[in-house]
Every structure is written in C-alpha cells, then in structure tokens.
Amino acid sequence: MLARRGSRDYGSILLGSAGESSLKQRVRIQTLLTASIVAANVFGALVAAALAAVGIPEPTVFTAELWWVNFIVVPVYIVAAFVIGIGWGTIVGVRVLRWAIRDETPSKRDARRTMRLPWRLSLVQGLLWAGATVMLTIMYGVLDPQLIPKTLFVVGLSGVVVVAISYLFIEFTLRPVVAELISAGFHRRKRSGVMSRSVVSWIAGSAIPVIGILLVVAFGVARDETSKLDLFVGVTVLALTALFTGLLLTLLSSMSITGPIRSVREGMNRVQAGRLDADLVVYDGTELGDLQVGFNAMVSGLRERERMRDLFGRHVGREVAEAALASNPELGGSERVAAALFVDVIGSTTLAAERRPTEVVEILNKFFAVIVREVEAQDGLVNKFEGDAVLAIFGAPIELADPAGAALAAARRIVAGLADEVPELNAGVGVSFGSVVAGNVGAIERFEYTVIGDPVNESARLSELAKRDPSRPLAAGRAVDAAAAGEARHWERMETLTLRGRTAETVVYAVMPAGAAGSADRAQPTR
Image (cartoon, rainbow, N blue to C red; front, side, top):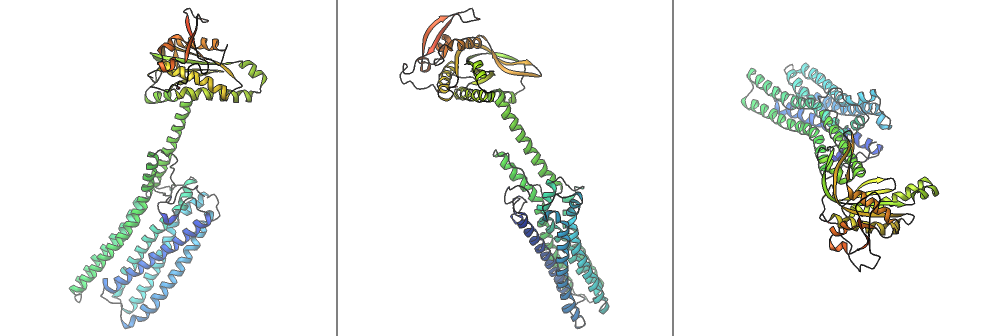
C-alpha cells in the first residue's frame, strides 16, 4: 500500500489516508460503493415518482386498472433491482479489484479493467433502469397507449440521472485504487476526463430536464383537455427537478475537480513553508492527475536542487556556493584585504605508518571538524583541505569588520579545541594578514574559489615555525597590528626573522601562555 501521509490524501476525509491497512481500505471502499449506488437509485426513484404524480399529471397512472402495476409490480421490481444491482456490482467489483484485495502488483489487464470499472458499474444501473423502462412502458401501454410517451420519458430521465450520479460517486470512491495504479505507472490513454464529467453533468442535470419541459409544453398544447394549471404544475416540477438534479451533479462534478486542485494548493503551502517532503498522492486519472504528477516532479526537482546546493556548499563553502548561485561565476578575481590562517599536522607520516588507514581517516576527520567549527564561528571560510593541512580565509568572499581579529581568535580556539578533542594530533597554526587576490582560479570547465598572495605563503611558513611549540599559534606582526585591541592583547611579540622562501622579515607574535592575558573575553565574530 502507499506510504502514510495524511487524512486527506485522496481529497476527502471519507476516503481515509494512504497509510490505512488493506482490510480497512477494502471495507471502506465497499461500504461507500454500496451506499453510493443505493443513494443514486433512491434519488432516481423519487424523481420518477415526483414526475409521474405531479410533473406530468396527465395522462395519470393512478387508475383502478393500474393498481396492480403501481403497488405490486413496481415495488417488487425496485426491491429486485436493488438486490441484483448491489449483488451484481459487488461481484464485478471484487473480480476487477482482486489484485488490490490480495495486495498484488497490477498487470496491464488489471489496470485497464480497473480504470473502466466506474463505467461498468454505472452500466449495471443503466441496464436495470432500461429494463424498468421497457417493462413499465409495455405494461402501462397495454392498458392505456397514451401512457407510453410519459412512461418512456419519466423512467428514462430518472435512469439517466441515476447513471450520471452513480458514475460520479463510484469514480470518487475508487480514488485510492486509482492512486495505486498511477503509482505503479498506469495511466488512462485518453485525457478527457474533466470534459467527460462536465458533459455527463450537463446532460443529466440540464439537457434532459429542459427537453422534458419542452415535451410537456408540446403535449399540453396538443391535448385540448390539458388545463393551464396542469401545464404550469408540470413545467414547475420539471424545473425544480432540473434545479436540484443539476445542483447535485454540479456539486459532484466540481468536487472531483476541486479535490486534486486543493491537494496541489496544500502541497504548495507546505513547500512555501520549507517542507520539501510534500509529495502528493496522485489519485486522478484525468488531466488533473497530470497536475498532481507535475507538482511531485517539481518537488522532487527542488529536493535534488537543495541536495546539490548542500553538497556544493560542503565542498566549496556555503558563502562561496551562495555567491556562485546568485551570479554567473567567471575566472579571475579581485584584490581584497583578508587574513589567512594555516593549520598543518605534526608527524602525519608517522601517524599513517603506525595506525590503520581507517583510524587515520577517523582522527583526521575529528581534527578537521574542530577547525571547521572554530573558523565558521568567527565567520571565516575553510578554503582548502590540503592533505593533512587546512587553509582558512577571513574577509573573503564575505567582508568582515575585523578579519585579522577573527583569524587570531580562531587560531587560539583551534589550538585549545585540538588539545581537548584530538589529543592524538598536534598541529602548527600560523596567521597572516594583508592584500590578496580572491577569485576563481583554474579553467572554464573546472575552477575553484581561492585566494593568492603573500599572506597565504606567510601563514603557511608561520605554521611550520609553530610546530616547535604547537600549544602556541604564531601570527605575523601586521595581523596583530590590524586586529582590534580586545584580541591583540592575547598576543606577545617573540622575534623578527626571515621565513623560509621569503625575502622580507616577519615580526612574529605568539599567543600568550594561559593566564598571562588575564581573564580577557574571547573575541566574538564580527562582520
């Protein structure tokens, strides 16, 4: 059966939810089918009685010669028709829906027969009313030939109304079964269901009653004994019949249309609220079912897009991903003032030699998790994972009010976090600050966002130098000078030297030992 969703999966609370058990759904469908057929026939019988007694009073069927037809034949036939109609319909329904009763996968033949079931069950009702029309016309006509047109019209009109109501009721009741067929990939070949429903409603609710009114007027004019009162009563009853019958059929037809539309509207509201699990149960085999299918395809595309956005953000950073999605990314970059933070593992070769690969990966993942957490807490961007090293940027692509202070604060917290959560590893941490070029580098077919400049190289060299004492990250003097006073006071000047691969001298600062800076608050991320 279909997965559980809600109590209005099929457009009405009467049909239950898609998560019901097979037994409960079978009982519900059979009960509704029986009730709908009985209700349609009762309504048709009332219409026939009203038309025969009042709508077309002349010639009358209430004569002494016809008492046995009115009070014996008609009641017996009605009871027999109810029994035969319900029994016949039940047998046909059970035979066609055997695959659903047994929870089997439907075949093409099963799908074709199930889609035709509303017409077949309606045809059963039509045959019974056709039998009543023929039988009563003969019986009344033998005794009074003038009753032949009246009997044909009254019983025929009532039969058409019953068939129309039965079809709409049965189609409504079979929505859960049709939903299973559609979910299994079966659809109607012709998509004209909405038009068919409208035409059936118009024929039974408007066209035939109007024709009846015309016939009553014509017979009244042709018969000299017809009084104006009889003509007025006949036209009034037929008009009221058309009014109520048309209203009922219009309501049933509109419910079959508004149900799928309402389900799509509710699904759109859920999507608008951020819930992308708003798949609909597709239960309509007409053009409205195509609307439901299209909605599900749209939601599936949104889910896939959100998944790709999430994966993209995890690979390149959420800020870079958002910038790329918001515009058309191009090769090249722009000059920015930013801080670079470089973290490099100490003894990674020894770690790989002494531990199993799975253990190494697990330790490195804990190592990277600490770095990502602390960098993002200061609004930085983890730009690259270079084997066992990490490059983080502060001030690009998102501008920060104090990028140098954010990088220095992240460096301190990374060292503290690694000591607490990843004692198996030590790492050197270096921070630099200055002018860089930030943008997309590579080829037009494959590129990445990165930063290039002296601060990146200087931070990498400082991380090497910091391996002498991994508990104290190092920073270039220009980074400490550019930082806000609240962060700068955590750092002290150590030495001035020329780092490997550079010609200019670097003033090296190190974070103060624990307690040396007093009880200074940790720097908060600033933009």
